[in-house]
Image: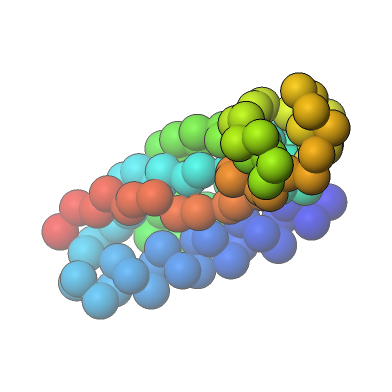
Length: 113
């Protein structure tokens, strides 16, 4: 389960940022995760519970916003949601470019002094 290594990296990054601001502990972490980012949200939540043990974020709350996989056709300009991950336009069959849905981003970190 690679979600544990991903979440360990998230916690490490958050701790480094919290230390820069001389925070005592992390109270909330907010992530955006693309629908096709290659992670399972439930597994990511489980990994969070493991990764925060004995860290500044041990009592933190995790918020996850799921970002839909979106394409934009390079031919007709249609912007569309593609839950199956296709970059072929559903209207004209042209090739599309990825707009969103593959990201994994730390949006914010809340801390106590």
